[in-house]
Image (tube, rainbow, N blue to C red; front, side):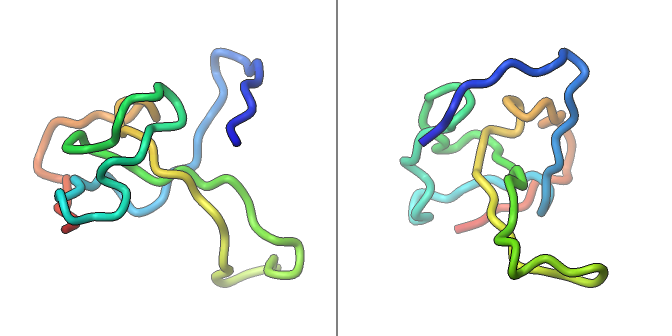
Length: 88
């Protein structure tokens, strides 16, 4: 469930994994973008970090966390250039 909230216009996002292009065989290909409600399909996407379980948090190093896939443009990222990876 997505809960709409009010944030300052200067609110920052934390994205992971760069910008990717989903292929038709990818399980998220027909999923909806939680920001705009359109299908992710063949538009560039990125992962937005949303949190981690308190037991998984560490002082340093890496931890398991959760993210949502959104259109890169919805996250405010530039989708021009050769930095887009194709994910089948």
